[in-house]
Image 1 (cartoon, helix red, strand yellow):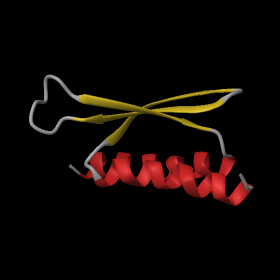
Image 2 (tube, rainbow, N blue to C red):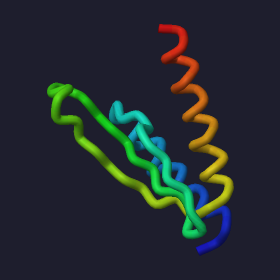
Image 3 (cartoon, rainbow, N blue to C red):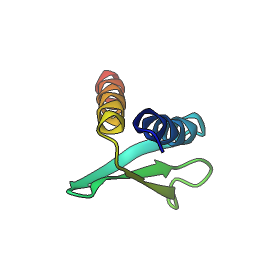
Length: 78
């Protein structure tokens, strides 16, 4: 897979979860990339749904970092 295509696929996965109402709850980075944990509280806040993605491409890591900062700013405003 081409370098740009890899980034595009990872970005689409992140965008899809965000569009479904998930938010990034945790990030674990290591030499294998980044592991994102998304949480969706939806109808039951006590039992959130959790999705995990393994992000490999450096541009995808920059992309989710930007989203994470946006989420934090929204929380500060509240």
